[in-house]
Image 1 (cartoon, rainbow, N blue to C red):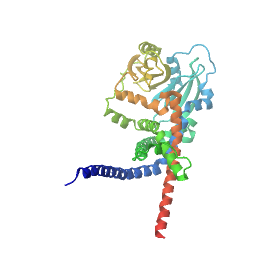
Image 2 (image 1 turned 180 degrees about the vertical axis):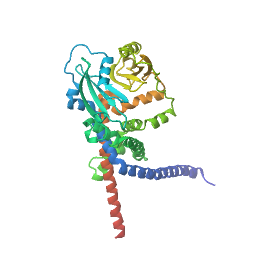
Image 3 (image 1 turned 120 degrees about the vertical axis):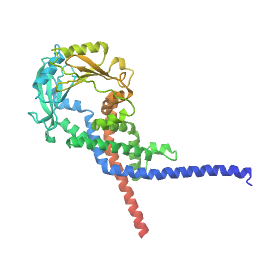
Length: 411
């Protein structure tokens, strides 16, 4: 018969045994995740480094493009009143070669700025300049063309504009539509790699200081390990946001389907067929009417579609009524022929899934948090090659150590 003293002694022993068994189980699973993390890093790390570096450049692509192409962006005449949006958009459409399928225009950010339009042509079609995307600048004071250039060339990557080249390299690796899908799949695998890195980072023994700092006066091996670990952890939140939003842009249908499993998404508003185009000035009147019901915000960009059923979208930033929301952008969707407001897209309208979808571009560009967000995205992109290099060095160090141990055993 066991004495009370022996029972008390046995309880801590059993508890320690359970903790040891649990820790052994976690370590065994960690070895599996280490293999996943290692082989994903070795096989795809170079692509992550390339995509991260080009992404850092693209955080400031508009500022860079304006500095390199001032004639495209700056009006030769500044002063007086702008022409109507209808006149400006009509002037751009007159100049653009036909058969475009969609278009966008950034609102000028300065008083002397032009409207710079981008017209997209379907794959396989040929505009006169062999452009897949053609930029046309319209002077807002005269509603006259002020310049044009090929942004994306239809077949030759070396004929892209500089920023167009970076965009295509970033989201398609210069491989066309196939590259878009490949980079989307890479994004899913990168997401697995980042999450497996978090599992490997987590201190099983509770020694948090060790995983949150870089040890001073450490060996080269330890310094490299700590640098890889710290860079991965401190960039984790931004990296996850960039990967998730990047998957959305490259695999939009699959992404929408997945989000739709958790929250119903609003369908895109249908545009009725019209016997004739809208009246002159209808777009300006429609926007003015809608802005009375949904005021505030600075004009940011416009998008619309070619063909008969032409959905038009006007987007604004820094909307006053959304100032207490982190995401304070709003888009108004119109039927440009009838002037009807079809949909309001902001943080106060639609389902949780709709709002989540609206977050993706501001998160990916960092614009949702202003300059702070953009700098965080810029730095995170630069950390991608650092993570690849330190991970590769760590693998080579372990490989060298394993070979040395094997030679020692043989000797």
